[in-house]
Image 1 (spheres, rainbow, N blue to C red):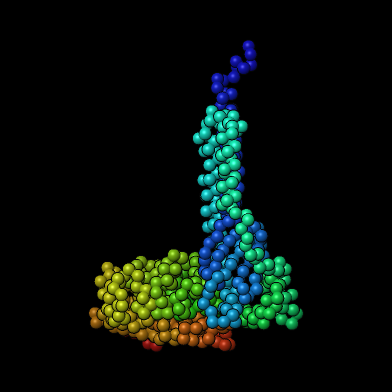
Image 2 (cartoon, helix red, strand yellow):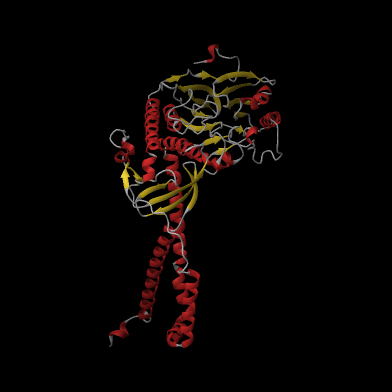
Length: 518
């Protein structure tokens, strides 16, 4: 008997189909990878980076290249990975190149927010390119199947047909007309391809911090002319790094009250005013105190403009693993700040009671910020109106409101007078006020507390190599979802010493404790 007779029927057909399927998968895989890589390398995203409008493009150079524009020199640093990034900076708000360079120094000293932002954009572009490649990879297979075997034979046979030649020539001519290779364009300005390590560029007389030794600068005549600005930036970077690094390290050794069984600690910040140097300091204090929630009473910026997203990115990066709640301050003009933080995981409070790890929480943006969102549709609402509406919201809540988070404590006066909340937390004044005990008209007890400026801001300005005035972070302790105590930590400027306040006990029933502290 022939061996072929012993094979199961259709086995040859199945093998042939399997071969074709495998070949199809291979074609799809090759096409998908090729198209995905092509799309990825031609991808770009428009972001706000380092307070500039910026275009971010991925590369395979392994370097992060910062193209700063026509005045300042380009910078480059090794990413330590195969994938790099090309960042082209556009317009920004600055009154002088000097101010801009100083701002760069401050951001370079605390870059994690910008690094996370750019990394997320590159990852998003990679995922998008992979998905497009996977879909477009089916196109060759789809065309192959759509044409069919018989039509493919006809096409191959018709390659020698005159009409086929005519169509091919017409396509080539059309492509040339669209391309127009004869059109003349001015040659671009050629930049030097010479990259010089920053320590070499500045020379031995200018000490460069170790963490900047891997930074390279494009060596051009213009960059040499701006050497003094770069020297100033390096000096500012070094001073800022030293100050805030020491403050962060010292925070980890502070003698703070730790939460007891059943207690939750909230890290309370306000009035950062773009001082991103204080973000790791605040985080270190929160970690030392066992804080597991973050409250932010606003004024994270000085103008509420998009160029200040570096500040919002930084505070988000510092507390990205914690539940966090915020309201906009009067300097966070408009709805931009609240909307930006909301998209990045912050619970932005807009006038309604929400659940939180420390009980029912109520908050509203400062009316002077025009950031009331959907809570109040009427434009031009007055401060007194917001105060009254906030009291109505608190007093009509199904459960007693544990905390009211506002930028200005004045917004919480009426609801405390009516006895409808345990604690009003605020900022705005840049100094600590309280805790002040209030007995409501219904006999219920509440407290008002205003924290100092976490950014160490003088007026609305806090950016610099150190805080411009004493910087304050507060800790609020809760038990059974009710506030039971407050503690302040103040970083003094310019000496960088800490003053740890005593734990203020909050008693919500009976008479106030003697001394009000424990």
